[in-house]
Image (spheres, rainbow, N blue to C red):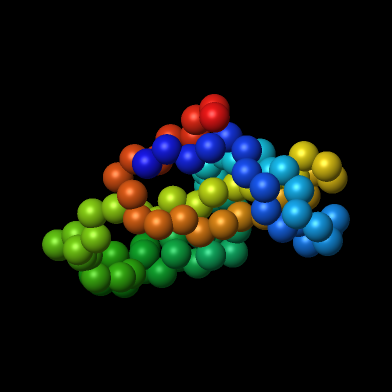
Length: 94
């Protein structure tokens, strides 16, 4: 699916409809020293048995919901919008 590079939508900071720059949300690198990561390492290692959670053998869903990142061109406020399930999403110039 093709998504336009800029759309007009509501900005909560400006309190009006403004132009927003559209990009795809990419999650950052996970921190090894975060509390959850340390806990997972600790639980995984002690005692008998292997993984903390059961291993899922069959993957049910074939796609993930793509998240769009909208940046207001007026004030720079960034909001995210959960998209739909798509194999491929592409941001294009209109």
